[in-house]
Length: 71
View 1: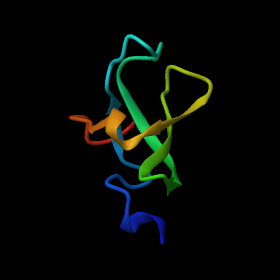
View 2: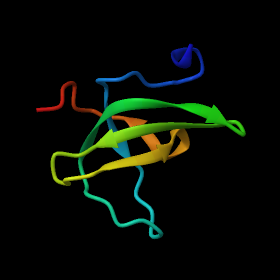
View 3: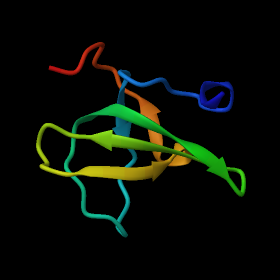
View 4: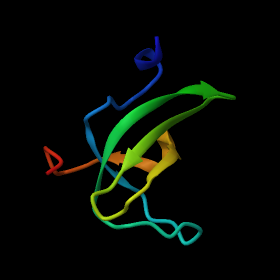
């Protein structure tokens, strides 16, 4: 069962922590999928309204968004 190791759930709104190594839209992202934890690195599929594509990111790159829902 994937949610046992995941901090966030599908449908939650999160923020992607800014990094100089990654160009990404600012603002909230929606968790659209959970990925199996491999090598201790829990990952998520996330989607921003500002981008046409999804991203796969590590749990360490995410924080819970102050926005309650993703419009």
